[in-house]
Length: 178
Image 1: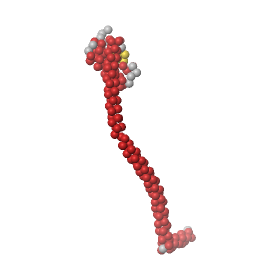
Image 2: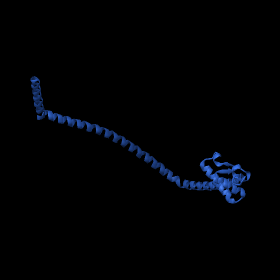
Image 3: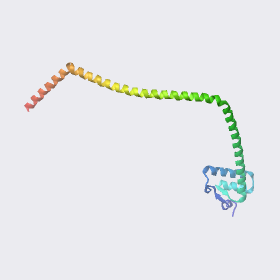
Image 4: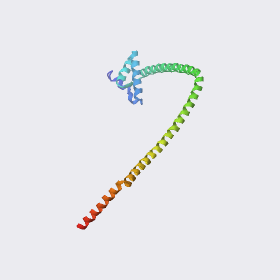
């Protein structure tokens, strides 16, 4: 068996390990980092990684395990540092917030009062707009009625009546002629 075929006999496809795409990328990156260390098993692991395979021999797995232990230790140290920094910031803010909290409470109460006034005004506005729309509609109807009354009370009704009467007479004379 040639050395290019060896990874396939001692390797498993990294896509069959039940890892997410991100985890597969981390695994491949880890294999490349181990390969950079330079041992022969590391170089074989690098070749396997580039083919999407994980070397399953004890030497390769041990080297990969040590690499991830170092990475996790570094992450743990960074987490501890950041948590300490977070506590420092929290304490600093806490020291400065005693008076700010009282001021904030007062401003929040003021804000709630303002919002209640706004809600009340918006409700009043909607009610008045509704009433105004009804008044406008009745005013429009009243103006139409006034115009109708003016037309029927002034010369307009006589003209209509004459036209209506003459239409009847023309219509009746037309009936008699046929």
